[in-house]
Image (cartoon, rainbow, N blue to C red; front, side, top):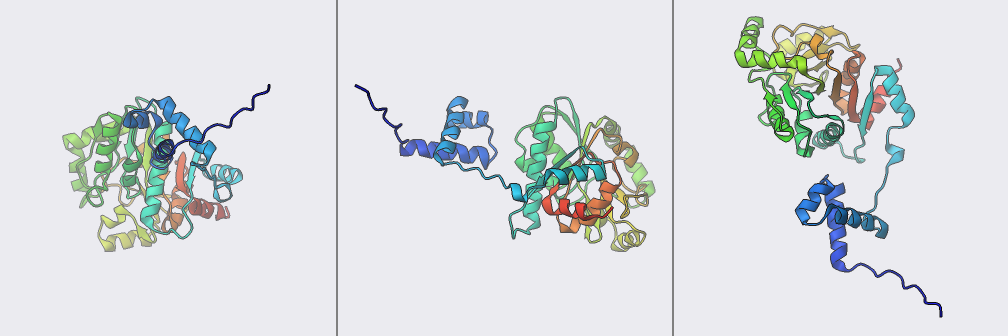
Length: 321
C-alpha cells in the first residue's frame, strides 16, 4: 500500500510570534543574529532558522525598491565625474521632507558603511556636522580603532565633533583624540595660541595618522553650516560675497571646488593639504539645501566615498559638465 505523505504542520501561535520578533529585530532594528541569539537565549542557528521560516511563510516580506534606487549607469557616471570609488545612496519615502528624517537615514547609511569597511587598527577621523551626529545611534559595533577629532567644537551640546569622537571611540574600544577648543578663534593670534596648547597639539599631530576621514558638508548659500554660524553674520556675508559656497572640515570652497583660504588662520582643524592626503575620505551629506554645496565639494576632487540621498545624487547628475 502506498502511504500518502502528510503536509507539514502549520506552526503554532508561539512560533509565529518568535518568527515575527526575530525578523523585526534583525531587519528593522539592525540587531545582529549573534546578539539576537544572546538576548533571546536561542542559538544563532535557531534564530537563522526562524528568519528563514518567516520568509517562507510570508511572515517576513522583503521588498527591493529597484525602480527608485540609483541605477548602475548613474553610479558609474557619478564615479567618473567626481573621481569617486564608492557611492551609497538612500531613498526617502514620498512626502517625507523632514530634515531630521534625512539626517537619520544618512547616519544609518554611514554606520552601515563603517561596520562593513573599517578594519582593526585603522585611525578614524570625524569632523563636526549635524548629519554626522546621527551616526552613533545606528552604530552598535566597530573593530578596535582610535578616533581623532578633525575640527574644533561647534554646534549644540550632543552634536559636536567632540561628542561624536567620544561615542564612536567607546563603541570601537579605541583611544579618542579630542579637541576641547572652539572651531573658530577670534583672530589668527588666538588660534595660534590654542594650537600650541599641549592637548590640542597632541591631537593635531595625530591627524597625520588618520586612515579614514568622515566629513559633513556645510552650505553657505543658503546658510546651513556650523562653521558659518560660528562667525559673525557680517563676516559670513563678506565671505559669501567673495564666492564661498561650501565648507568641509573648516576648509572653504567656491562653486567650482576652488579653495578659499580666508578662514584658515582662525580655524582649529585639520589643514586641507593634510586632509586630502587621507587615504579614504567619506562625505555624508544630502538634502535640497546642500545640492550646490555638495557639487562644489565633489568638484574639488579629493572625496573618495559619497553617502547621500537619491535626490541629491540626481542633482549631481543634472550638472551638465
